[in-house]
Image: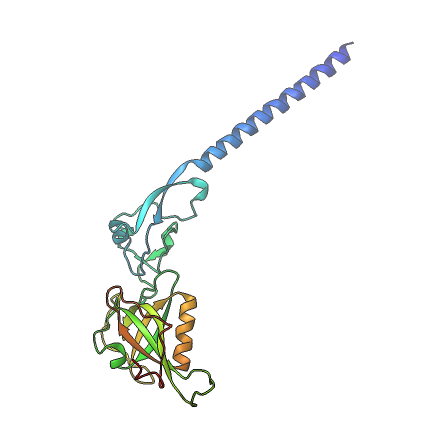
Length: 248
């Protein structure tokens, strides 16, 4: 009888130890979960931070802002404060919007400085244009232009060989640089850059699919730019050929 009682008591003790262990584990798991969710301060890039921008300027201009982020979402080495020491450091490379900023993105010397800033989702393409083909000296970074293409159309019946046609290739194009003068000022910029084939390089920003059209036009035709007026529209369906040039 005594042995049976002792066995029952031992089983009860083992059960109690198991329950206590589970409770302590659950309490520890809850504590870890709370710690993971506890907010920490980390800087978030609200806008593009160009290479060479000091941390202090980035904060002053609202390019990076402090945010409360759950601890488990904060990367190791995240930038948590900008003081007198860190404020003098510069962005080593561009910091993209939405990026949680780590301290290692700032240092004493930028790795490089881009001469132009390409709009998000677009491609920069340079084309050589003569002075008349770029509206003399009136084309500047920020201008919006029409690009015309003079080309030899596919052979057709009753059309003499070598007949040329001209049409608007692209109706509304943003110029981001002319020569070495760009929308993003850089040191020693401002002098026209001559292309290998003559003329001045004009750099424009386009969506990738439209950029492919421009590249093809560069390779196959002769391009000419026109400065757009407000609300001007140039229809790509209006084609002028050798035969229709003097038609009314």
